[in-house]
Length: 520
Ligand code: BGC
Image 1 (tube, rainbow, N blue to C red):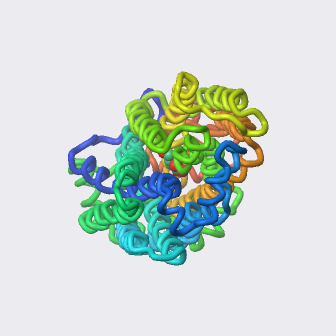
Image 2: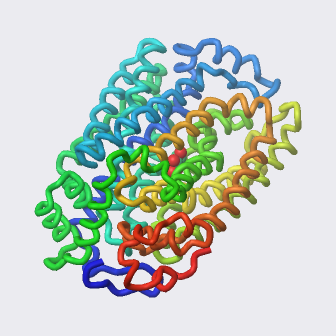
């Protein structure tokens, strides 16, 4: 560190310069990338519960669902082909994230966002015009490709643009956009399901073009991050950009740290081989476990299948879609809580509180479904007080997720890696996330069919494990400048021994424990 920054009370170094309109607007535009991801997370469940859609593309599921009336409710939507419609997207996103990591590193974050938006646009056109299952699935694959690019580039973009003290809040703009996307999709499904003639699903799918256009146009106008400009060798331009986003003329100190980080990164030729070295073990483990656990909270059971789940539980068509709208709204509002608190209370506090809240509500949901449907799945919960309580419990669960694992699942992996492995770390995060999203999307309906109410206990068990994991293995990263993250790792009781002394910028100025506190 040139010149030595001063240390804030909460740990980490504080550079001069703060928040200005330019950086906030830039980050808001970039966060739009979350909309495309959110829109299709939210749209497919409602579409697959629409009768005309089922009749046209999945007639056998339609018949099976009709036959189940009064019989075993747990299994009425169990079809691998139907779930492939939802889940294929995430498989494509998984593959795309590896290409995207190369583009993000070699051509910048902005280019990845642009590519993502355009491919996504193509997918939405194909979906809206679909006349057979092939068109549907190919469209979904293109959407997935777009999502892979967006999820690779947007979180990193946000974390690099933001000043350290509000990095959490700005980065969560991404999750905020995801939840808005899901919510808008829920609302649109509610509306299009009422359309006479039954072509509403077409509108639902085609409207994905709107966020795609927003993201593509946004990306055209966005500047790239100083870190990325520097990574691609343009020192002067990178410095100008840093001045602009910090609203300051004197950014020498932060810039020097960026240059140091970039030089360290340049010495590394192969980020992929590199991330396998023991010194990056902490980041590698966290970049794999965070997305793995995020999906095993079971959140996408609600996101994808809320309408189907509510229908399975005996809610009527319109009540099911409405209930999805309600839990979608809770998701958006609760995300705001994390924006306000993440840089103050820190990441770990939110993880732990959210975990406990999700655990309790999941157990309660499981018990209620057990009580009402038993092991044979015969029964119903149409309306009444019980149904209200169930919806309430699901909302408590969604809120717990929305201020913990939802946003932090994207924030933490994007901020914990040094520059030389940042793109690789993020690609691992995205691909593990997508892989697990794929599995949950693909298997949920048959898991529900076989595990019944026990499914909710299954996810609750994982929530317990991940909460303990966070407590012991995640260092607190609030307010730590992004290119100084190694200091936070070095101070960690377990991971500290993996980090060589020379990996810590400014290690000769103060001990890391002094800088970052002892991290449990
Ligand atoms: C997750 C998605 C999830 C969404 C719910 C995101 O952070 O990655 O899988 O559907 O949150 O709000």
